Length: 275
Image 1: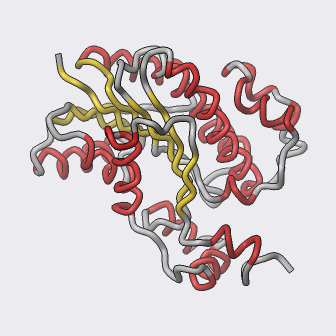
Image 2 (image 1 turned 90 degrees about the vertical axis):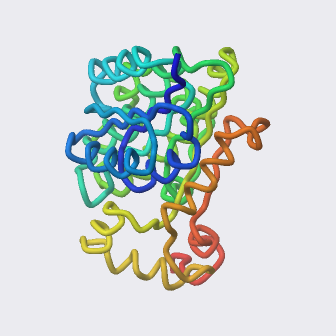
């Protein structure tokens, strides 16, 4: 029986982590667009990995359940790398909440039922979740533990309150790290771990959309005024992902790792601080 690493969102970051943790395993690349999954599959198969592809819409329960069924038909699900999502320049608030928040909760629920002992998961969140104002303890718990199909009905997520795409994205990404914290308790009952990485500006097609979009000037300012003074690379995220999913990360679960070149530090205590 093969050990399967499922990659949801076959872009640069998902591939970078998968390359580091999938030797000797079967990689199932799932993306909203078949052509994206196929392009990633060619790169990985040319590098010697065993690869299959499929499509998935993470905002659809039926689609996610079909993905889980396909993965388990191949072998034991040993890893889940969730790197799919939409950015503030790509979608309105409702779509961001459905894809980035509900979709992540759904994937954690469904893969938490099949992940095997010794397995692990990574969810890619964002530095944006760290710049959202503090929520109440009740709001934190609601985002972390509300049953998946009740999540979008939370009053704090009503579209008369969440009217801005950036705010929706910040809430979704804060929600991702909170959800992972709660789901780590459930995954542990199967002997598995799950963590969140919150990257800053990593040079991917999504980042390029932001840099060329209405928030482009703000993005460039974040890069220029960050302590590191540059954007990150998918491979740098891949290194951290490999640590968290591998045996050296065996004591780490339910945690969120901010890697943003110091943008958040500068936002609170440096030149990026709001005037």
